[in-house]
Image 1 (cartoon, rainbow, N blue to C red):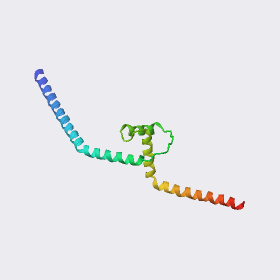
Image 2: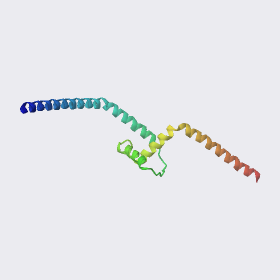
Image 3: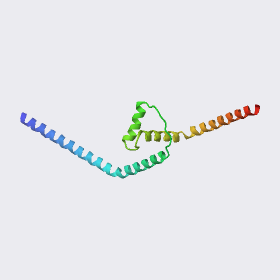
Image 4: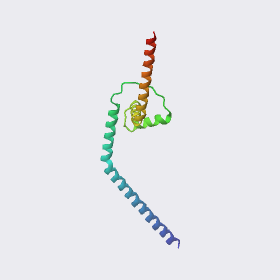
Length: 132
């Protein structure tokens, strides 16, 4: 009896092992196919992203010092490590530029208010000059 049970266990183990190997083989084929299919798309996306980043960073002339928390610094370092930018400076410039673009309407309103403040200051200055 023990011999038959052992033979049955070995047969079951062999079948399970073969099924696992089949599943693993199929998974490898699917993954390889996905990689082949998306390779061109990834290259195209990467090229477009690099081009957009270069355009965004083309005219950086001013230096700004900034303190970051660990989480923000980690994200900046991820951009550098991924090769999307060459340095932390480029990563920060890219994120600032994208943030400004994303909040265009807010910055338009701020610019309008700043213009009003400048005009009010000029009016006050002229008022003081007129009284002298």
